[in-house]
Every structure is written in structure tokens, then in C-alpha cells.
Length: 283
Image (cartoon, rainbow, N blue to C red):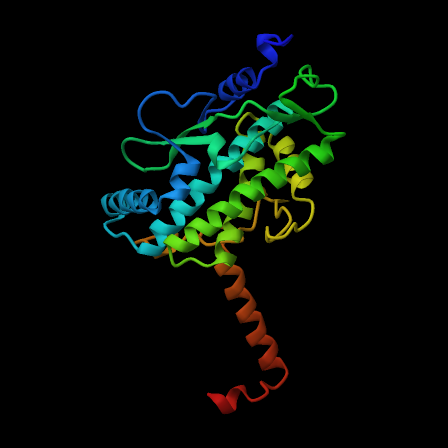
């Protein structure tokens, strides 16, 4: 163990985080059936084709329809949550940032029903940490000077993984870079929030989202959009999941389509108040 105790390893961190939340199974091992490394998935577009087909079958079974854009968007969001939640949960609970390289992460999808990730494996042994971490002298650890620097480590590692995903998904689907980077921003902001909310400390998750996404760090498309209101914390999405294309469904709260629609209505009202310019002529 090189002077380490069992409780200071990354595997021990993952076990503690796994016990503290039930959104995903988090583990340091990808043994057993059903696992696929993220690097293998990104390198072979047939994996996405398989995932889209399973998603479309689930949508047809659930909603009697399976719009292609909805299946594409669901898989897009589900994939991005793999590195986003692995990084966010370890930051929140342990103040550690694991390797988020595609080769160091694996996923297992649900066998039945909705084919979303049910388990995430962090296979790398190294991690970023703070100076007071009990394993900061471990050769596997890289020490950040403070929480702001550690947040930058998470943001950089996540963005590097997201860039691999954007390249792969653009090549395999009709979705463009702006849509994909907007979804990557949503996934990170959501998962930082969820990491706290999943264990009853929503405020702590919001604080981490503000720490990691305190500004718009390109190619991510916005700072954290988390805001508190009458119904508690909520956020404005940067990307659309196309759930509104399903029978009987509407846009989600915070959907960018709703903001664009409201903006168009306000623009029309302003145009009417100012005489309409050439609007009436065009009509």
C-alpha cells in the first residue's frame, strides 16, 4: 500500500460516495458482464447505434412513438452524466477529482426498461486533492493549492472528456457542436447540483456548481444557471432534450425553447408598441 491505509485510497472514496447516494452505483471495478469503457464506446459508433436503438424501443413501449431527435438527445445527456457525476460526486463528498479520461471510466446500462446508465466505474488510480487530504503525499495524488484550483482540475478533466464525446457524437449523429457543448454544460451543472441534493445537502451542491462554473469557460456555454425561487432551486437548461416531441409531453421547466418563445413574443410586443416598422408591410 506504500504507506497508505485502506480508508485513504480512491477505492475507499468511491465506496463512501456509493453509500451516500443512490443515483448511480459508483465503483472502482468493471468486472462482470455489461460493462463498456467510455473509450471503447467513443471509438466505435456502433455502440451509439445500439444505444439509440434500445432507447427508441423503450420510447415506443412507453410513449407509442420514438422521435429520432428525442432518442439522440437522451443518449447524449445520459452519456455526459458519466464523467460529470463521477467528478461531481467525488468532489462533493471527498474533495477529490478522479481521472475522467474515457479510458479510465466505464459504464453499465440498465438491462431492462429505460437504457440509462445504472453504474459507473472509475478505473484510474490517480486523483487530485487538497493539501489536507490524508493521502496528499501518495504518488497517485496531485495536490491542488485550494478549492478553486481543485474545481479547475475537475472542469478541465471533464471538458477534455466532453471534447472527445463531441467529436465522436458529431460524427455519428446530426447534432451540431453548439447543441453538444450546451448539453455538456447542462450535465456538469446538473451533476454538481445533484451531488449535494442526492444526500440532503442541496445548498452544498449549488455552492460546488458556483465554484466550478462561476463563469462561462469556453467551450462550455454558460456559467451555472442555478437560481432559487418560490419552488426552491432550479436552473435554466442550455440544451433541449426534445421530450416535447413525445405524445402528451411539453417542454421541460427551464427549456431554452420556452425562453426563445418568450423572447420572440416580447420582441413582437415591442415592435407593435413602436409602430411595427415594416412588419405590417411584410404581412
